[in-house]
Length: 254
Figure: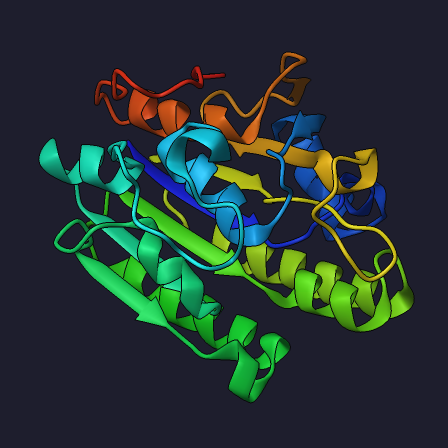
């Protein structure tokens, strides 16, 4: 068993109801369009909560500036690497470098989307990730796309440019899925939503995220209500046969 976690920054669940690749992913997955982010619904705090399965009040990161934890909680990559599992990261927003501690990643690929554009970096990340998954033995791989969030800030959430960037990344997700062997479970999610040209509040548009899980029996079904982004890390460890950290607050949903 291997796990691929794909996160599209700022993806609102409504995008997955559109025709084409988005709706196709729903038809193939166990899913919910009503999961919750954490407050503040900001990118780095949300990712810290995803990877450490605690709220920002516990890990202490409340802005996009990383600050070391006063009382550290072991993260997902640390838990997996200490159990002998190999972890890999592919991302195009530099601040995510602090999600894992030194030595916990077997492979890390960063492409600076701020310099070359996030659509271009999404193309490059997809190619690099596919190449890596075909030749390597990572147990857990994280693939991150910033393009939807960048389009939301520049043009507004749910505007034409935002929808286009989101659907482009979902096509890239479909491309990756087409290369995977049967022993993968894939989790697709987001860190927050957005409204107007912003996010970070506790309004529904900012706090509601999708979670999709593909693999296993392949049956499409609704995941239980009440899921949050903190439930993802314990789900990954459960799939890989590794105990969840005792301080994690989330629960496996598979």
